[in-house]
Image (tube, rainbow over all chains, first blue to last red; front, side, top):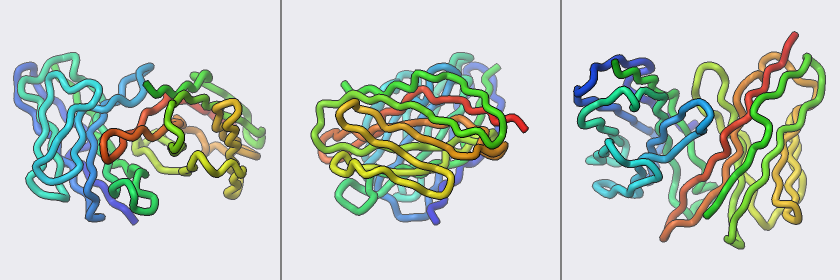
Length: 116
Length: 116
């Protein structure tokens, strides 16, 4: 079974802090994604990566950056956390397009981040 | 731009009732994939089904069934004889090709509450 893990289920940070959210997958997937989920807005894509050291902006990249130094790990960075970044953050991974089932994303348990 | 609409924000039923969750999509792609995910209160999105645009056969898996109708751009999900454990937020999603890969566009989700 695909397993995607996230470093924390709950996190509380202060405004201005630098925040790291870590995601690890154990299925050798090339693709990894970061979303945030807010009530009434559904899931919105922040950043994604199709390979090590590669990244692409999603729909709402402002205020975030990412790092992918190893295939299995994809980090989301909040350079200077703000209260409007309080949200549920979800990581996902998938095989590349062209491989059977390649566009199916598998999700981690989520990190609920509160910025005070 | 692709769009997924889940018009039902919340649905409440009594156990053993059948319930249908609606999903309508918009895309200009001729090849695309549709998905349903379940998000129980624990927060993790669980993959339920993936369907490609060339396969309009209905799918049944236990109490779950899916009706894909290309003519109306709909991919509806029915739970037969609902149970309390079916209470969750359900998301419909559409894959979108971007360059040599893809990303998912999600609907805003439908909160299903099954009361005993």
